[in-house]
Length: 416
Ligand code: HAM
Image 1 (tube, rainbow, N blue to C red):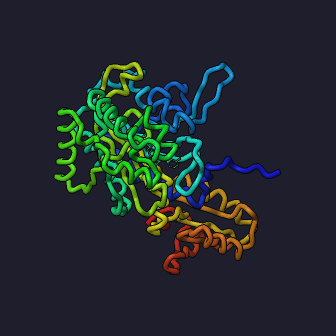
Image 2 (cartoon, helix red, strand yellow):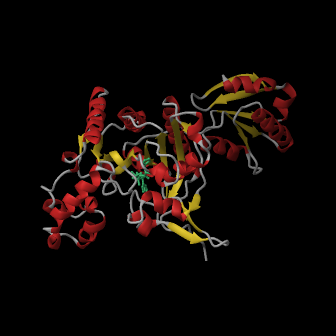
Image 3 (tube, rainbow, N blue to C red):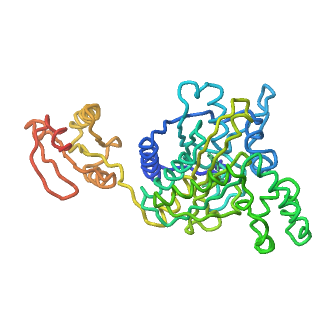
């Protein structure tokens, strides 16, 4: 039996990996310009880290985590997202001690046992960033602007930025109570899923996927009308700054994210080109999480984006990245010259030139075909005659021109 990969996981094949590397390089470039530094946390953590941060009642913790008991009897989980681990590490390593504002980013695989479909995988990849230590709306806007900037770098501008404020520990419980009371009056008309949510998480009813639920809850109280002074002022300033920076947004009072740690600002970037899994990225402020995980109360804000979803949009836009190409293919004209081509290939490589040669003892004709297939920029055929003369013909495969070069100067000739 041929073993296959697990459903919802994907190989990134050699033909795709240069695209991934290119995307990662652009993303890193933006993060570095915004002065975010990379953090790498383990791929698995104690299960309680995620249940305490993301929330026991969320779909992620309730249904989607890859959780198992390891041989020492600990319950561990493959990380479903990055924020919890970053905050855990921030507390554990006292990162806040050296500086008041810690800005970090990650590019990493995440795991959720969701039903696979286009744009939804069980092992997927995120890039994300967290700014820990700032309570200001300016930092919210830095995070949002940075996320938007990444898409712009790829020429993607037709996304929608939706923002909301989900309130704080003072005004949100009040609003939830009000909403719960209102929802109870129409409970029997709501979908079963929404009925279940009224008690525990009434705000999730407002972002139900069910069209009928949406129509029924159209005129329900909106959180944005029930914020306390502090949250309202914060939200106004976020909107003002986004406007000043020329970043278009829509306020969506129904936006509640699928993770429970958010306070104040929450946002999502969506694209019409993605179909039902339309979220490119999401994030928001989480001022209570550090404390929840045993640290000092530290305000923070961040976002994460799905790389596969970015790739889908890039593919729709026929975005291509330059292929990795050898600068030179060294072909051997006869058996006696193979020793020289192999040794010279290795030498040139150690001098920094990307060189390929024949390792399959193929005919000269087959070697020339291989040079084409590898998209080599140049080819040199070396036989007894060339070795004796110390010179050979360097053929440029892009413009089909030939020139004579000294074999000792090959590196310079192909690098020029
Ligand atoms: P999230 O909304 O759960 O937020 O995920 C962020 C992004 O990851 C989504 O918008 C989507 O592009 C991608 N994504 C999520 N699940 C899948 C999946 N099964 N397959 C493919 N892509 C997926 C978070 O993870 C938060 N940690 C974001 C954050 C950071 N908030 C504050 N800081």
